[in-house]
Amino acid sequence: MNYYIASDHAGFALKGRIVFRLGKKYDFFDLGVFTDERVDYPKIAIDISKKVASEKGALGVLVCGTGNGMSIVANKVKGARAAVIYDGFTAKMARQHNNANIACLGARNIAEQVAVALVKDFLE
Ligand code: RB5
Image (cartoon, rainbow, N blue to C red):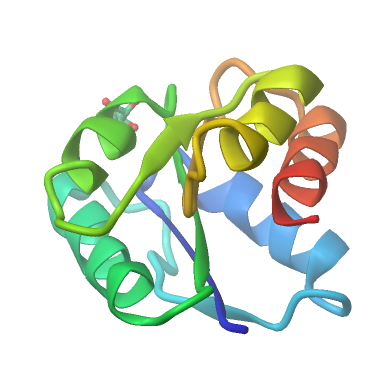
């Protein structure tokens, strides 16, 4: 099973922390960005969503400022089911009740420790 992760500039630092903390267990394909230079998030969300949607069982994680922008765009891709996660309940229900294959989270409203736990909940 493949795991994909990507962010915009707002999520860049948190994405790095998630990969650092969970990368041993989940061998993420990190699709960028790789600097905190300002970028437009829609292209990033579309790229990862196409990959996740085209591979059976693949899961994705998208980090932006709030999680909202990434999820709005990701859900335009056929086969992508993106959910904003912001606590343990939404992280688990996204998979169990919504069959989401992409988790979107906000670097500006979720602390690192919590974000790592939410991503773990989602992926498991
Ligand atoms: C970028 O400044 C910010 O708008 C973006 O990361 C995201 O929060 C959009 O939903």
